[in-house]
Image 1 (spheres, rainbow, N blue to C red):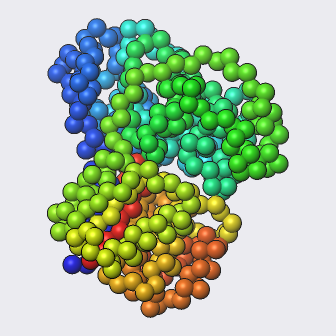
Image 2 (spheres, rainbow, N blue to C red; image 1 turned 90 degrees about the vertical axis):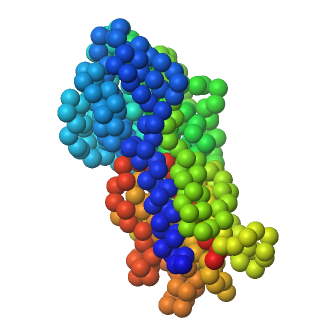
Image 3 (tube, rainbow, N blue to C red; image 1 turned 90 degrees about the horizontal axis):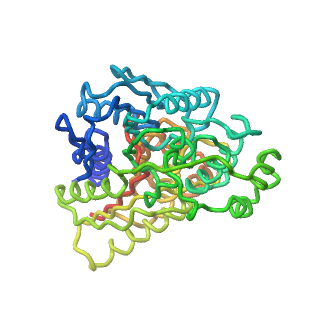
Length: 422
């Protein structure tokens, strides 16, 4: 039994379970009725059925939906971070993780498509993570450059996705249910959730969903991260004195895949490999280094106590953050793995691995990393700490041959963390 190999296999099995090919089990079409999770939509009385969508997983989701609906699809528009031909559906490549002129062009085209739909049409919108950057049309007085600056500052300050998307919605003519308001026809949204807790207000900044009751105040966010002196003045003024008179509405949303589904598959795979699986949470948040300390503390305790039968597999999901202070290369999962390795001194027969389910971790080409205590034989803790301080996890983990690389996975449901005790 290799703890390292088992960790990687469990992580990859979990990611595979939430790829678009594996999340459409509850979507069926008999040529007349579209069955979505037990709700039936009569497509026979619809003039046209359009497939729209945005996000890192939207291309693969569209391909799967096309297999189900076939020629009933009249056309569509998909915006993602890469291009792939889909017969009868236009795919537009846009920008991620920061918006640019491509995002503006994509937003303009999506608004135009929505406005062209007639009352007797039907729209199926495919929503996944990455939409906030890929699809944009700024509010009056705000530019793409402003949104780019705000996004970058918030991310480096350690803001989580709900805080980030709260601000993005206020600066957009698409987000927060504004895109849905341009549709005259009926429609539904099929969701692959990349938000901890699956709050529809924040998945892709909610182009087709609006609920004012749960919105976070932007003032609270700016106070929390001391941003008033860092953000463009025109952005501060808009957010401070905003009078939102734009119409917004919501379509019915169905969450087809999320982090919890991936964790359940991870537990199943761990059991197949002979481990006793324990799912801790799908809501892990906070600084990556602090989350690493929590997970390693579990490994320490259970490696020396017999409270649970071994071998053990601890499973968690969520999305941590990193307050960037250095100029190195890496991402939240690699930073978590590095911090975890630093805390592993004196341990044996344990392993920690984590992965971004989209295959992209920070500013690197790695998805995450896997570490074991024996790596401390090759590098000192002090040296590891210097890399951590410079947010340069990728460089040292590359030297230690600890990176996990998957390439673009075609899905996105936050992150997955695995801790093994042999």
